[in-house]
Image (cartoon, rainbow, N blue to C red; front, side, top):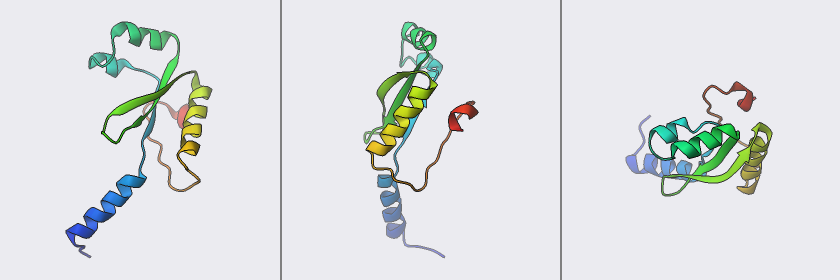
Length: 104
């Protein structure tokens, strides 16, 4: 089945408006490597077990919403952000790298 281009574009735009990206970073190594964060700040973040909770903005940048210490507080913050944004159920995707415990 082939759909007209304008119909496909409309569906994609609608899907994009409903899709939000929240993230939690437990390591900031890549930010330090790419000069987005200084080595000193990166070291302090690692030593204090600080995790960055953030979102993708409308301007297509990543913005830090809050800094949390520890695993449980990070999960609580993400859950609270979902509730604040009106999430009441439905499709939910978790993508992770090397952190099975966090996703469970």
